[in-house]
Image (cartoon, rainbow, N blue to C red):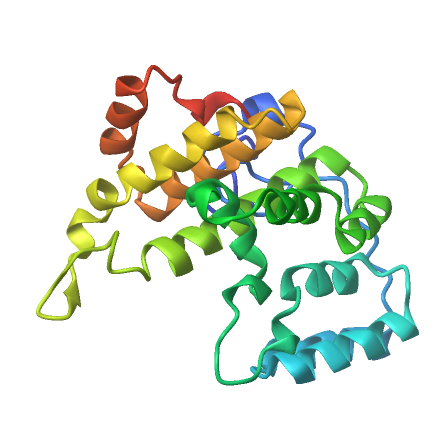
Length: 244
């Protein structure tokens, strides 16, 4: 594979020679400007422990310890960002909003959220203090934002769309994976439409968000976007795959 292709997904990135992350899969490009990687041995050891830990509470405690050791570590800040409030889970009723990618629910079911709650989710999506810290520490802020939104979009599709029987119809309890691209085209088209109509977003935020969701769907479905493209065209929308 030559240097003009992403080393992770293999897609061409000729026009993004200066990008740090692949817009298709979110992986770091070989040509990327290296981020700060001078974490101490102690911090690297803690991060290895985090990878092996399943309990969100233990992950959070370890990450706080690592942050104390090196407040300027982007790796630590990024782990804390994506962990979100998962370490706060507990009680009889699971609050799905503690899952970071829940933020995309703003565009799947906005009518079920109060105006105040919508503003809270939008603010967290683009201006959470932990995100702002990551942006301060990274080399290319736009690339980081694209990668961040792409990761959240992919996790949302996996957890809240694939994991919901209302969208992924089941036969005798089994999901029809071969029909995922068709079954999930409708909810994703609805989300893209809501994103496009969100006047509270800046144009560049709207473009990044729509592109992230479309690219995440493309990746999850192995490139099968026919049903989604048809839905978008039927709604008079432009396919956002090339916006990034």
